[in-house]
Image 1 (cartoon, one colour):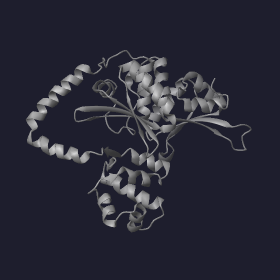
Image 2 (cartoon, helix red, strand yellow):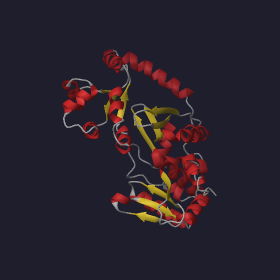
Image 3 (cartoon, helix red, strand yellow):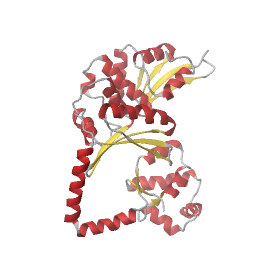
Image 4 (tube, rainbow, N blue to C red):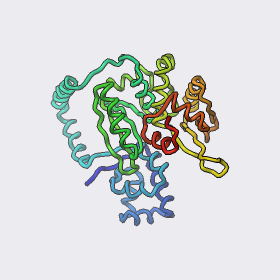
Length: 329
């Protein structure tokens, strides 16, 4: 049967179908139903949430969206496995024999806890941990789902090498936790999942980063800001590896391709922190404070080279781009 798609809110579900209608240049829902080769009433059930959307339909529609819409909407869906119907029936059985299931579940959880890797969330703050937190600030997410704790990093599938090797190695080295990596075909994304209550507590309790959606509110933790320059630089490197952008302006007005490093995030207070840190290390940059232009930008070969020397990158995507123009060192 395949997985089913569940939208995280009615607003997201409505937005998805409207975006699909527009991207296909269709005018009516009948036309969209014909595109999917289903009846109009079936499409209505998908649109109003009476039925979950089959993954095959979701992929067929989302591939017609532009990249920005596809990536945004992919962060606001959940997947129901192909045996969700049996799961629903199981819940009915569970409600009838709850005391038996609870006893078995309690024993299973105790067994898992005994086998799971534990670590002290107050482990020493070193470069690796600071880098991990910077990376998390850039594209991480953590939350609690009933008895389960998930920490997730999401990136472009093109960065497979970065996520499968470097990030995975950091997780194993720091926490002795092996991540589970999943690929999202609908938006060409890679997701690195860490299931650990200790990592959740490390992020939310020690470093005071709230669980759930955090892009507009997250800040560099005070513990890192109060540390030495090596720790601060590692955190900034992680942030730029996750969210930074290296590009070259090739307009004819420049004698040679003009390099820039850009950090574009919808969080002015965080950008102010980054701007102040870069200036502290004498890396000249500009801060865009208008809502449509919230970014920190480093201009020109001299300042880009200074950033590479003082902060640097680990992400192969950035290193290859710099290397193509002999700016890695």
